[in-house]
Image 1: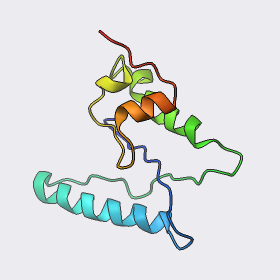
Image 2: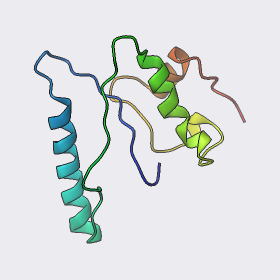
Image 3: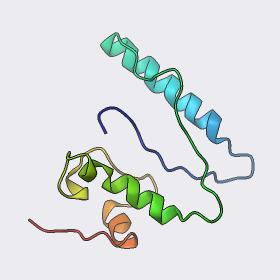
Image 4: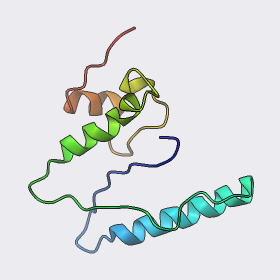
Length: 104
């Protein structure tokens, strides 16, 4: 999305710290962006939330992947260039979330 970022992250240990991860990611990317473009990247405060046990990760993942379509930035999930995963390939994500990999 041009004006915001969606991340779906999962801690791998009991000591994982989501807020610290977000703070560090914003610090490092903001520093680099400011060095190159001479402007701030991030607003002072962001919004993050933790999924509750009754919330399904797949529903949130699907919402994130389809967000560029709702915003009119792409017509198919796979056409939006700024999405991905460190854990899964795009075809794996589309299949697991039952998002049709539409052909042209």
